[in-house]
Length: 302
Image 1 (tube, rainbow, N blue to C red):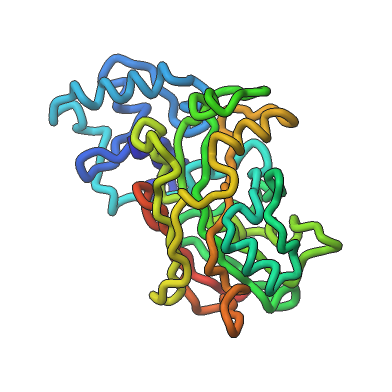
Image 2: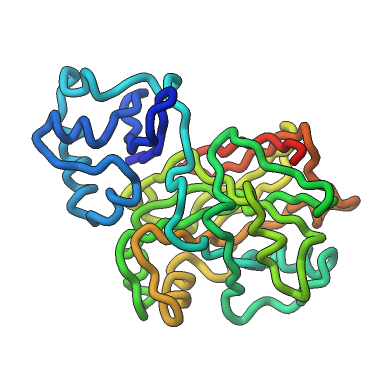
């Protein structure tokens, strides 16, 4: 399923599922089908596999008349970030593609040696924005605003000391995150000011449930700025794959339903180009992960 969070006009955010060119309101569709389903993404994730199975089955068994009054064309809605307000900081993974390690060492003074364990940082919930919402460029803080297209993993069930073999059993689904980074805002090797500023975590356009992506290590990952392609990678080339990341993080921090892991970016970030390239007000950045969709955001003056 492709799960979205949407808004109609000035109404509150609602949970939807994309189906045959429509957005189907999950709570209202559930009521029409005799099921009690929630109105928000986090509540739906909290219900576990039983909710996903029930909704999948109901959609498969439905008739056209079942959608009357609870669905509408997707063009009528504003898509929000699938999880507009994460409960916790997003887990970011740095230096997780070999060529990105090399370009970072060359241009950002990071270690040229491949990491021997995942490099973990965080982005606060206040950094999250939706498809087509503006990334704010604060010229007083940065002259080096950069892009990083990433596959994001949405945790579906509590994971504590899980094995790599069992790790994917804890995944609810996947989305796209642009790990926007102000390269000149790193502080004594710490990245949160560089990566955690408001609007620095565009997310969306949807969460694709894990049953539709049985192998997250086969996905193309690409970025365009003003229509010019800048990144062209594949999740097959992660240093630490999704299984390994979940297992590693869960040994030191319990992962909970709704937690988000941004799994790192391939080569082709602005800092790695020669000459270096940065995003400026008026630019438009698009990030795409195969099988999930494309995330588009303009850059505006803060």
